[in-house]
Image (cartoon, rainbow, N blue to C red; front, side, top):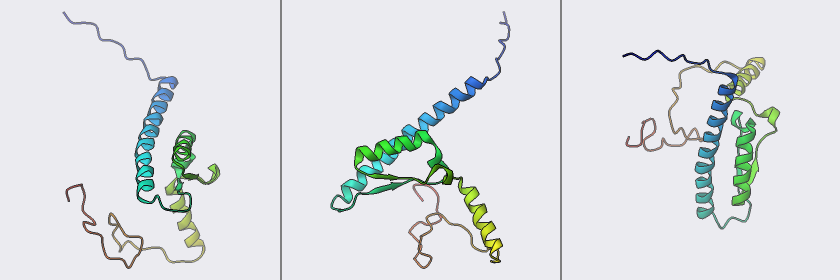
Length: 141
């Protein structure tokens, strides 16, 4: 005998808020774990430094109050200084890139061409040798 099909209730505003809060909490816990490990490793490798180490957070993620407070607590616990821009300056990277392009255009600078292909693990120094494995994907590459 077949059972009657159950009706599916529409997603409510509260459901959406609960899902978002759960996602934010999961991200916060993950960042706390990973960054906490990084801070511990930094302290172990550079314990002889005379200045207080600093954790800098920027971009859109720095505007999230839960993440900011989680990282601030982590820094306080581990003896790091927490540094983040004021909230009104914490914008998405795409907006920053667009703004940089608008400023270049307003200054009459030429548009960047597409002749340079991006590659992973690009060194900050443009004259530096390529890193071993640069451009390869995956842990075993």
